[in-house]
Image 1 (spheres, rainbow, N blue to C red):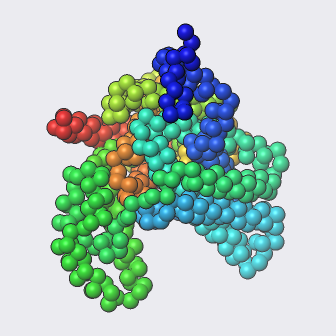
Image 2: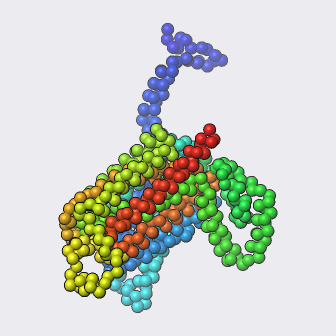
Image 3: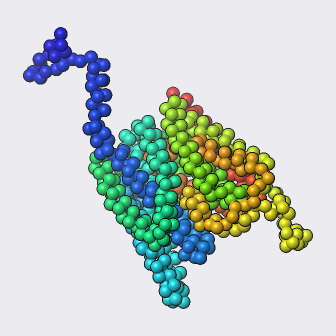
Length: 593
């Protein structure tokens, strides 16, 4: 007897009873038809991926190109590049909390659109200025006794810094907030989106500098500026349309919890301590309905503040916002995990200008370095895959522990490379030179010291850019152009161990990075998500600056082994902080259950 014959006529509606396996097969068949693919292409996840890919591609191209342009403008001198790097790092360090607070206080669509517009327009105007400077450089240098050139340099650096600040705001808004809402706070879907966004970032990290580098090499710097200008204008339109559509089709994005208003920004510390130990939702409720005692003392303080001039009131509000942002960051339950991630930025064990320059002194060619960077990108992608599998099998906190252990074990190879045959480490170079040493240097240094000093002789003037990939490509294409690599070492065991450790460690590194990123997304109160992630960005830039200060203090290739050991100590400290967080989180979980 057919299924239709078994149907029941009920109120004029035919109801058919089908076995569950038949229903599952029909549903699976429905999902496999091209219509489901079309639905996915129009869905919010795909639109976010495309928008993120366009944004990351533009950022990578710009970070690479601006480094090259500044070096070319200043006669292949690193001064402008160093100034730009310090301005970028310093601005994010000082303004990270303010940027995050602005993200929290405004509607999501306005934040995304304003950040996108400011970033792309700043890059576009900066590209136009660079095209004019490259085209009429000699004429510009003759105006105002050369001061017009200084003005142009200042405009370029300021516009590039504004673009970086807007990019930071857009990253916080989309990758730290929108994604959480789009996934419906589903941890599995959130992990998948985070991993996919990181894979896109890894791919663009390699391909974008190659693309714009080829344009600049085959054509000219002016054409390169025009290429970036056109890309940003097209990207601006496409990203604006896609983000607007995502905002329309995900109604939850239009709902945003209230943040602490100005009159609550001056609450005494006792009132803030009461929120410690509460979960995310309780803290949000406390922000929305503050206690009357705190309101009373806040009103007293507001009366005092109201008597100040407007400029002082605004300055005090800025200071208070920064202070409250750092306080909010400190009282988060994932504070130790975020600090642990920041400590991982104080390292020379990555494909940045320092490691690249050191490899050149060890006789490694540029083509081989490019190949090694490609392999490192593959291992980074493997880390994102490992993260999703480990999280599904062992949970998020345990995934961070496993990733930390893998990262540290791989870095032991780098420590071994310091003492392996072929290592140029010479601790005597750290001692003050005596008069005899000075005379010896004038007559000619010993062979062991003389062997590895070509490329990093000016190590203290290396560019201080936070984007590691752009530094790598900048040094490969410009800084070491027509400069022979160092004399071949007695043994390649040291350099092999070093890069073997750096490349394999990226599996644990990116898995750990994704773990901490998702912990921040899951455990931060929605009303504080922007300001806390802004402070996290500030911490990352601060720790990144420390590793350049280390290199300035010990710039010779013979010092690199010491920098490796210090880097491993910082990384170990960071992972130890995460272990402490994991222990605390597991203890709290056992108490709750």
